[in-house]
Length: 184
Ligand SMILES: [Fe+2]
Image 1 (cartoon, helix red, strand yellow):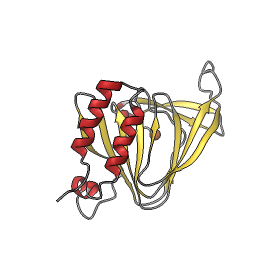
Image 2 (cartoon, helix red, strand yellow):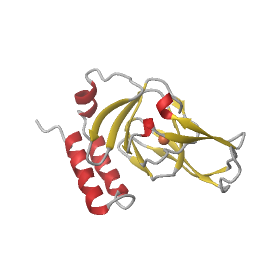
Image 3 (cartoon, helix red, strand yellow):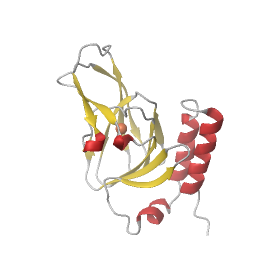
């Protein structure tokens, strides 16, 4: 039975893109590979089981050669994040079931005042199921989603072992979150 574009194919194609185009030039092509993967109707059943469980974060793939990670986020209840970056990693978010409201932020200050940060909304859009959005190293975004949302996150390096920035829009502040310590 043809189950569509597989995780192994995705990792192989992504490896080829990184070798031929590099990063960040290849990120748009990796997004296209991810959108192919999102169209595989068996993907989550195959890697998470059936019925597909809501699990906050599951790594379903890793390529040691490129250090690309593929994670599934399954959210039973709606939620949102504060604006954040991904430390030294690039990240591509692809929605598998239901959309995520994505906001991109631009930092206005030069970072010279410790703990201070001012952000301006740059883009606000719905990342619909079947679509993926690229965040290059240093890009700042926030997410908001409703109940029963599944999204896939592809990361260059392991974001969850890094120190990343989290921003507070009201306080105009920024702090470092050590994700290895469970801060995010
Ligand atoms: Fe993020």
